[in-house]
Amino acid sequence: MTRITVPALFVFLFAGLFFLLPALAEVDLSNQLVVEEQQFEPGSFESPGACLGCHPGIHQEWSHSMHSFAWKNRWYQDDYQMAHSETGGATDVLCGACHAPIAARTGQLPPHDASRFDDTSKQGISCDFCHTITDVERPYNMGNISSPGNMKMGSRGDGSSPYHGIEESALHRSSTFCGACHNVKHPASDVMIIDTYDDWKEGPYAAEGITCQNCHMTPGTGIGSNPGKSSPMGMDRDNVAFHGFVGGSSFGQRKMGNEEQAKLAEEMLKAAAEIELSSQRNDSQVDLLVEVHNVGAGHKIPTGVTYIRKMWLEVVVEDDSGSVVYHSGAIDEQNHVDPEAVFYRLLFEDEEGNLTGKSWRATAIGYDRRIPAKGSDREIYTLDLPQGRSYEVTVRLMYRSFTQETLDFHEGEDAPRIESVEMARQTLRIP
Ligand code: HEC
Ligand code: HEC
Ligand code: HEC
Ligand code: HEC
Ligand code: HEC
Image (cartoon, rainbow, N blue to C red):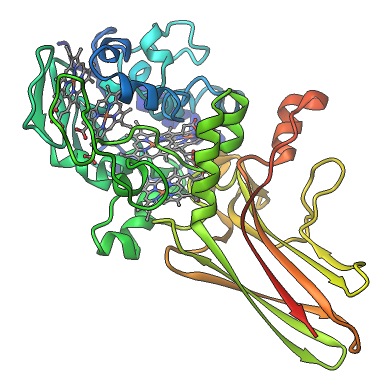
């Protein structure tokens, strides 16, 4: 196996970002180069098809996971191609390192148009990439070390396979394994673009020893178990690692024809939050206290690319005749959300001080309102509700995996209407 390091790639990458962010040109980026980037011969990583025959169940689950669509999916491609054109290609390898890791580590990326990708490279984050990771040098920006070859790393190490070697890897049982990709740091401004791993690590679940795998590699919501065999020729196990990696992407999954996985994503979203309501009257006004609790996620909700996604509160008040007397967070005819709603998400500040959802332009965090694991968020709505009538309040926590504005921008008049998922709902009567 040839292994060439290519610092030149980074020089190119950072040069592009300097160009983009001249104010940061003075920053010393040498500390970003802790890990020497790894390059292997094309074909060094096996295709998922090579694992299918002996691991059919796992292959089926993985093929419906967002990991398998990490490069191909059109919403990723829309953002990636926009980053490419706005930075003159400086982000090509940066983004591709996580979204097409085999391509990035076998010299097939750049160019960004996938014209040099082989079939394995197109299949996103696949079996052999994860199962030949031997170390994580830093828990962000793809800081994991690959050692492709016949030895497959797994968390058990006690089985045997006629096709490949097996080595026990405690790393595969730990959240650090996921953290190398589920933590994204802007290489020039150091802004944390995605902080799921850091956030988990500082939160209550890490303290209890509950990992990403406990929730995302077991079927269903919460910490499930999945008795069976990982291969028909393998041993009976109490819990075979589930490979569906379900998150919140119900819309994308449904559009790609994976209805079952879309439903799993909706269940995941619904398991994350609960709403608690109370009110206090002051003459003709009522203070409505809305508390949103994060009861099911091991990290903030929302997490991940929250600057592309949207979570918000919808509050509807009806009087006793059924007329709507107050409505916040409504969806209009163009499928846009009321801009005055309470939003839970992250937005960046760009070099001109404007809010942006373009991660490559992030110079600082511009807006951050999210609900911590096992924590809550409080909002008070002051409502004009004259006495002498009764009112019914309905509050819903809503989620979209993309904004309608983003879809409209990329796809124009033919843009699909993004679905809204109700994560939680609560009602209250006000006498
Ligand atoms: C000829 C059959 C066969 C093929 C092909 C095959 N495997 Fe396996 N694999 C097995 C068997 C059998 C086991 C042991 C199962 C057990 O421990 O119960 C296994 C176990 C594993 C483990 C678990 C390691 C551990 O102990 O935690 C991993 C990871 C793995 N295989 C990855 C792969 C990958 C990746 C591919 C494709 C590149 C692949 N396998 C192809 C038969 C196969
Ligand atoms: C994103 C990384 C990732 C991808 C992609 C991935 N795996 Fe895994 N796999 C893991 C991790 C992590 C574990 C160990 C989970 C644990 O022990 O909690 C695992 C466990 C396994 C096991 C052992 C299951 C058990 O419980 O005994 C097998 C076999 C396996 N993977 C095969 C595959 C095959 C085949 C594919 C592709 C179809 C694949 N994996 C894709 C990360 C991945
Ligand atoms: C090689 C980098 C990499 C590794 C390692 C990795 N992930 Fe991912 N993961 C991604 C990328 C990139 C996506 C987004 C794919 C997309 O939507 O285009 C993703 C998506 C997901 C999603 C789906 C999110 C959604 O919106 O539905 C979940 C859940 C997830 N990963 C969990 C994990 C867990 C748990 C681990 C560790 C066992 C892990 N990942 C390891 C890169 C990685
Ligand atoms: C206690 C269970 C639990 C743990 C631990 C946990 N998650 Fe999650 N995760 C959830 C739930 C529930 C959701 C759905 C709510 C949401 O999308 O925010 C979710 C959502 C996600 C999403 C999708 C976010 C989106 O909406 O696009 C990603 C990605 C993810 N988790 C990754 C991770 C990673 C990486 C870790 C470990 C560092 C981890 N999770 C730990 C329960 C958990
Ligand atoms: C260090 C790894 C890493 C890097 C670098 C990275 N991403 Fe991602 N990306 C992820 C992970 C992890 C997710 C899943 C988070 C979630 O689902 O919320 C993701 C999800 C996305 C999504 C959502 C896709 C979907 O289907 O919902 C888009 C779009 C995206 N990334 C664009 C980019 C662009 C553009 C770049 C480069 C400027 C980039 N990413 C760089 C890890 C990375």
